[in-house]
Length: 362
Image 1 (tube, helix red, strand yellow):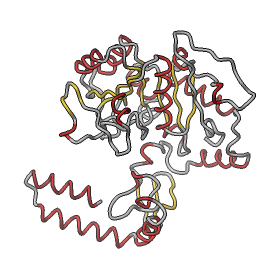
Image 2 (cartoon, helix red, strand yellow):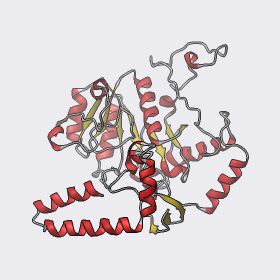
Image 3 (cartoon, helix red, strand yellow):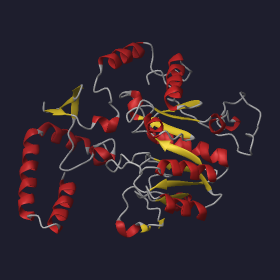
Image 4 (cartoon, rainbow, N blue to C red):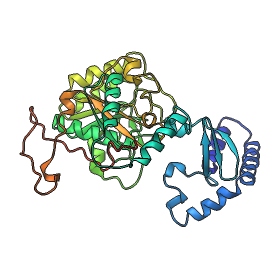
């Protein structure tokens, strides 16, 4: 609360708004917040002794302390102090059916009684894969456990398919917290570089410079600039990854014809086009942005709402691209083995792994 409000105060002052009045409002609202949420304050103080910032994800941290929740039904959610709220966030779009939908709760209870993780295939996985095929016009489906995993795996598949290393993302696009894409999300203006050649700006410390060099950045909704950047990196780009609608910096829709042009340029440059539909999938339309804009990517990444509140991710795509996923002998149990081979076209086999991938609970 504090940092965000201070930023708003600074912006308001620049626009001629009464700064003292804003500070009074801030102090009044913070005092009210503290008076209504003493149990959350107590739990946060305890949590800080066990976790950095006192939370499990940095997104959950804000001033003076976050609310700790205990129950939710439909559009309502309750904190540990008994305060009731209307939930306009719905876990960043995860809960399209609302909190604790009776059908989902019943299905989860049945599954828990039969076991939650087998590390073997289950029939439910086929049913979900077939539904995603229908909705997104995809040939093949693979499951992961989050949107971050889905985009990470899709990029690996694209690199394996093309034999290239660099990827291209757009300024403002958020594709998860792995090093390939945690770049130029909300970069400081002084670090952005020129509009026609944006710099790759890390969103966090701890990212190797080699990753920044492999991620090319382009401005969103600027097809002419995109064309020039792709020309500058001709033959180098394995994948173009894009949020069809940028939902992580507000709601920034594509200009008419932009996604169609991105599709054309990806094809012309031999790059795999990846739609990050983690937020748009099955929300923007029955078949996500792919259906809504009638533009077919090579791979679409899904998560959030397809699980109804249970952790899940998936990436779906063209058979030619997805079939680079094979068994990898170097990662097999001793004695299992599989002959070494390469995929037609020169791309080597790609590993896609995960203990919880396709688990029966999800």
